[in-house]
Image (cartoon, rainbow, N blue to C red; front, side):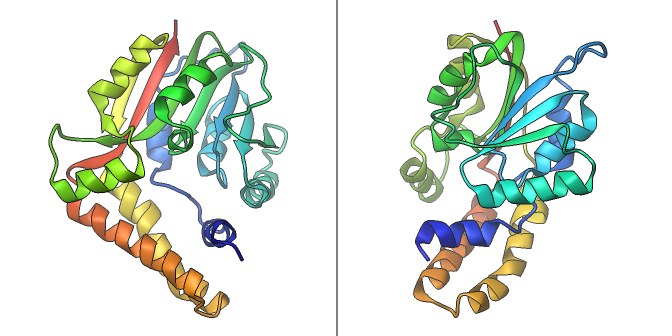
Length: 249
């Protein structure tokens, strides 16, 4: 297996491929005006196995196009949506988020939890804006500094991993400069990282290593995930995901 295939295999059975929760998804959704007479059209970009997709389908009257690059994740979402009777509401699409096959002003809402970093925040909000109807919404969660200054270890790490990391005020300024009016912001709490993401991840380490015969590549992946967990626990007061909700103007 390649490193990418191992990464997919490790995450495909997880409920979430990043920090989050149903509570935070619904909190972000509460900033978006819904009409009882007209269903929302929503694109969930970088949906993974679709935990938030299911939540959106259960709490809106809309239809959702769930987009991910990896069919393994989409297969999981399709199976779950059928189990819950939501297959008519959720349509999955295998596509690269940088080359989306959408029409201009096709959606009322573009949604992306923990995925926009793949193409970068500024590029994502500018390119995806074309797909949003006038007065429609963008809702994204993005890795965000919680303080204006940080210890060098965590700052150096994330500047290497994702040079676009910044404070909420800087992200909101980018939204304002690129044709959006911010309507809501909040930071994900610690439970979204530990209880919902890292704790379940740690429970999968041993079975994953056994499945792959403790190969060097599998051990390296697990070691990288362990290092990420320890870094978060050490510096959780300085960093989180910020959830940004903005209206296209």
